[in-house]
Length: 400
Image (cartoon, rainbow, N blue to C red; front, side, top):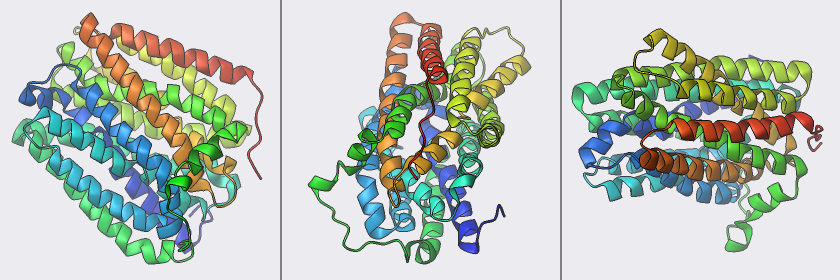
């Protein structure tokens, strides 16, 4: 398969499975946010606060994860992180908003090391010339997980209650942790560095690596803006559509459809980046289109035919969720030899900054203005400006 060895196929399938669960657990609460907020008597900023605190935790663990991955191995770290995530999801079922928000922070701590770990696992088994398409295919598991979140969890919530929906997520985390345990002997045996230092002086290595590399610096700035728009859409699409008097199940379906669009987008953009040999141009085009379709979504009205809303959701997903495969391939290509975990964690830190502050600002605007349209317009304008700049600058060659 794609010229991969047996270990490469195992790493690819493992990365797909872990990516699926990571995305599902990250959007599970957003897919049923109105129901949880109603149960906890929380206000309309609940979804943004939950996402924000989750990514505060992810910020911290993404920076420190690189050293742990090098010392213990990527599969070992994913096993521990997913078990910890299951515990965080169980804690999220508490009847107090403060405890639920704290559980989001713990879930973020579990989520942060997952992307550096699976990118490390996969980059060791794939030739650099195949990074765009392989990483894009791997990233397709993300929108499948988010689509499952939008379809399965609202369904379980409607019929059995939101705590049953979250129990489904916890069980998936445990099963995937067991899978990581099964493969860690194969994937970690040649990667563990028992003498890798774990100390406070080494915790900023990922950040320093990113700041010293021009391409990683550019990707970091881009990730703040692109990830901010992506997470604003994911966090508030269901809330926005229910405000427009669509049902919770239909709003969840729209979220799922946008994630199915991301599957097509990630494969298409990955193949296009390989064909034109410019990830920069592909990422710029994605940014312009995601801004345009986010504005279109903001004009949605209650009397719109449902199929039109689903088409807009699909087109938005192709772009606002479809860019990450090319993005992570660029990180892996730009990373110095043996430093994919640190490079991914360092850039992810900036992604998580965008995921924290942009949805929180988006929710603040929505709460105080009484509508989310203005927030959609603002994040769209900033994203398109970033994309236009990216289109005009020159390529920076990855490290050899």
